[in-house]
Amino acid sequence: MNPLKLMQLQNAFKQFQIRHPKLPMFFQDMFQNHMKEGTILEFKVIDPDGHEHIANMRVLKEDLQMVEDLKDIRQ
Image 1: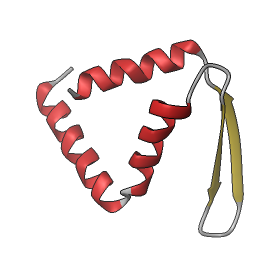
Image 2 (image 1 turned 90 degrees about the vertical axis):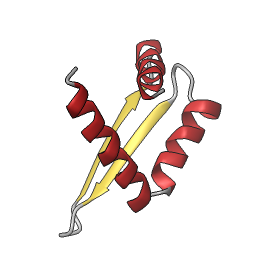
Image 3 (image 1 turned 45 degrees about the horizontal axis):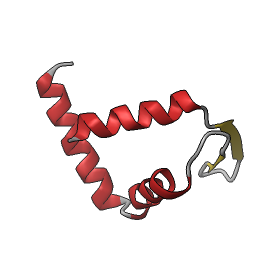
Image 4 (image 1 turned 90 degrees about the horizontal axis):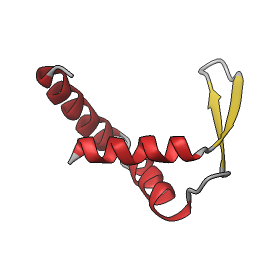
């Protein structure tokens, strides 16, 4: 991975956390305390026109491993 791009991504994520502080805290809590294999995540998006888009996924052990790998990268 390009180190410059990684630094830009880290800065962008910090700015995202400032703009939307509750979302990263929510995901951190979910993955630390509540997420386990078989958990179902549901995503709902409402666009500016009021149309709703919904999708869901069942968390697999590979998904949990990916999250752990991403945590290792951040440190």
